[in-house]
Image (cartoon, rainbow, N blue to C red; front, side):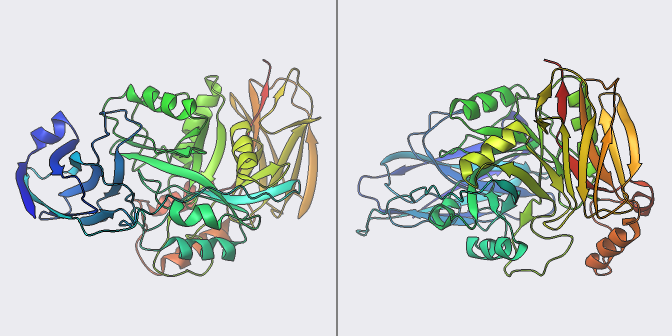
Length: 467
C-alpha cells in the first residue's frame, strides 16, 4: 500500500480542471484498490477516475478504466470484476494515473490523500459484455426515455431497478447515459430485448456543459478544457458513427462551449417547469439561424434505491416518441437523427403528429403546403404552429382525437408544432406542487414562474422548407 498527498489550489484548477496522480503497477497485478480522502463540503467537491498506461492524453481512444465523479471516494479494478463505473479486465503493467476532477475547490485549497493497494492473487480474466441486437418487427409509434442514470455514475439505484422502472412506465426503448462511463452495459447489453430495447449512450460531463453520445460501442474522452474542443468531441463521435446531442442548455448547467455539429438537442429535460422554456428558446434560435437539429427529450432521472410510483418527477418525464419501421436500436438512432418524432410530457402524454402531404416531421418540403396536424389527449389545450419568426398560428384543440389542416403560405424556413396547456393547466400545476410534498420550489423557481410561464405538453420536430 502506498499513499500520495497534495494540497490542491484554485490555481491548479485554473491551470487544468483535471489533476493527475501517477502510480506504478507491476507485472502480475490482478487487482487495484484506490481510496480518495479529503474534507468534502459544499465548496469542495473532487471527482475521481483512473486511466491505465494506454492513455495518450486528450483525446485518447484507449486507457480509460473508470470514472465515478463525486459519487464515490474509492474503487477497485480487478481482472474479473470492478466497482460500478470502472472497467474490469486485464491489468496492464506500467504507469497508471488516478484523475481528480477539480469541480469545486475552496478558496483556501484542499488537502487530498490518495491511497493505492495492489494485489496479485490469481483471478479469472472475465470478458466484457457482448452487445445483442433484438428487433420487434412492427412499424409504429414507440416511446422511450433518452437520458437516465444508474449507480454506475451518480444515482443510487441499480440497473435492475431502472429496468423495472422502465417496464412500469411502459417504455419501448431506453438510453442509459451514465456520466463519463459505459460500464452500465455489463447489465444492459445482455438484457436488451424486443420488449425493451436498450440504446447505447454516455453523458459527456464537464463543469461547463453536458452532452449525450448515442449509438457508439466505445467510450468517448470527456476531458474537454477549451471552448473549441466541442469540435473535437463532434469528430470523435461522428468518426465512430454515433450521434451527438447537447443536453439541458439552460440553468443550472448550460452549454458554454462552442456549438458543435450536433445531431440533436435535448429541448426538454425533467418536468417542463425545470427551466425548459430556456432550452426551447435556444433551440428556436438555432433553427432560425439555419441549423437543423432534431428535438429530443429525456428525464435525466437518477434512479433511487427503489422503484418509485408513477408521477411528474420520475422516469420518462418527458417521453420521446418516435415513428419507427421496426423497434431496434438502429431504428431508434435513425429516427432520432432524422427527427421523426416528438417529445411529450409522459408515456401517456398527448400525441402530436404533423405532416405536410407525404412529408413527416424531420423532413424537408420543396414548397409550402397546408400543415396537417393530429392531436390526441389534449382537449381544450392550444395547438401553436411556429416558424423562424415565431408563432404563426394558434388554435384551440376541439376534442380528444382531433385533426386539423392549416394553410401557411408565408412560413419561413421551417414549421414546428407545440401543444400548450390551456384547459389542463390548473391540473398540471396541482400535480407538480403535490409531488413536491410541501417542499420549496426547486431549481430557484419563483412562484411567478408557475403563474406566468406557458406549460408545453408536447413538442414536435420541424418540417423544413426549402433546400
